[in-house]
Length: 171
Image 1 (tube, one colour):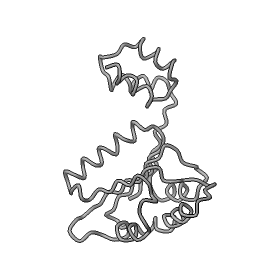
Image 2 (cartoon, rainbow, N blue to C red):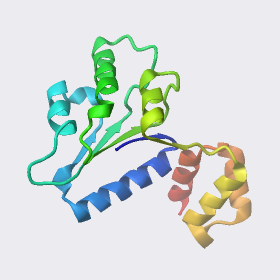
Image 3 (cartoon, rainbow, N blue to C red):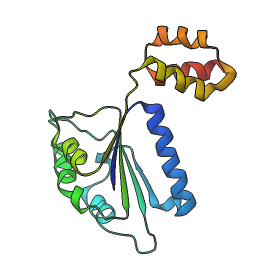
Image 4 (cartoon, rainbow, N blue to C red):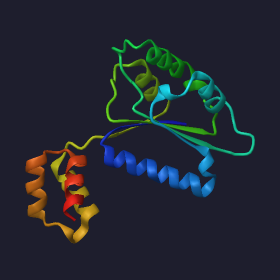
């Protein structure tokens, strides 16, 4: 399975932490690969781990942060990696779960279109002020008033990540 998580950092990180905790409980911490940059590993690593199963384990979780879903890339290493992933999406071992964790993607890219056609894309885009207020109230419960929420939204717009960071500093 392949997932693409896009946009709001707070929700993406919560979901990823839930996946990690579930994997540690059910399988092992050894089954989790959190890749901060896709270029940190060579193609052999991806071939050995994404396209095959482990001998002693059932599932593996791969989290790839900030994969370059772009159409204008000029770095040959990134282009090579993009082409590689484009060609292996159909071949990823069925027990491997791959999560691409990105703040932004170019929806015109071949990679994005391929994932969209085969797998799941979860877009955590907050564009509604009432939804944002509801989420803040859910997180901070009775620690913050409605007026305070209205004021911080005026100051920080609809940027959930910035608002949560500011509120955590105050609490």
